[in-house]
Length: 443
Image (cartoon, rainbow, N blue to C red; front, side):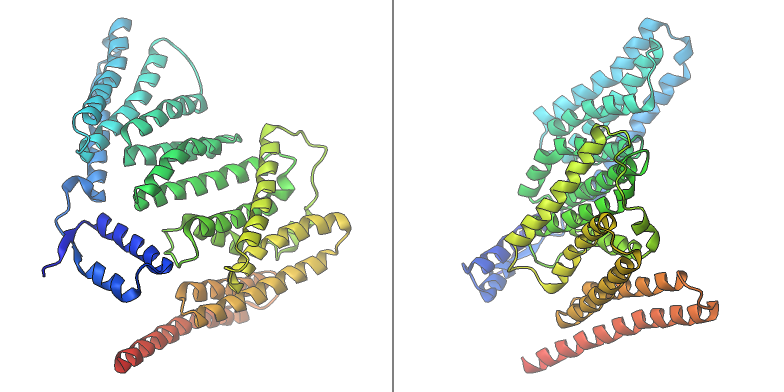
């Protein structure tokens, strides 16, 4: 019997659901293979369903809007106030009409909905700017972006556009890097929409939005703590706790199955942050400034970040208790790195020697990286193996930069580490190939 045709989205949904059936014991692996074998992926996808088409449509919408603005701007000075007002509002009205038509009468045309949503999103900004210029309503960039964002979020829920979602996330990210304000809280307004994406299995869009949220939130918190904050000396510890929270939340939401680098942004960002910050803690300068500036001026943002820090610690402890039996040793080590932050903050006030703390952190990173490499070999996980190797290698490199070792010896060590990376990966891939050949021979 000829296999039935499914789209890539439908086949991905069936694969995901059948994995759950196997785990729950409803079917076995052989039955899952038979079910999946009845369906093949259709190569003739709808034009509007592909990301490349959506990208081109979005770009076309942006170019059309930009062209209209340029044509109006060319003769702008010759228009009176009344004409300017009409021309300022006209693009917004036209974009709203097109959006209403696409949502009301052509909801099945994804391309039309994407184009109308993006045109409406930029028409809002253009109208705000032109009206402000016409009537001399002065304001700064920050107020303009906030106003644009507050009007753009309802557009997202109305149109349900992938392009508008990315633009809203990028706009919040822009605000996060602009001022020392908790603009990352605007990401909370996107939670219902992201949950809807997850339920509808629109995972690619869901993952990209999560990347924006993780990056924006991290940048905003670091920026807020680093400048004129009584928490500035705790910045590295707060960031480490936040990364531990990302990792535990990613495991809680997506489970303990092995995911790709991009498909679990919370875990990936958490691991990268844990590895990097734990290496920074091996330098003596960071422990030296672990005191809290109680005499500094505290504001709402400082109390909010301190609350985020406390929530992160409590959430990590709750995750460890709830998932105690599911965690493997390398996961314990990664999440346990947050203890280095607690040790640093408490140790400074309890009189812990700087040398003792630095030695403890170095030993922890050394032991943890070796265990990660061994776990990667045992579990046949190349990413885990390379992660442990990277962690160990950077620890060695940091210690070289922190010492008076001759450059020639440093160069030899660099060559040795590079050769180790290449050799380990070649050996690992060769081992996997031999195992595959043995399995085929046994079958």
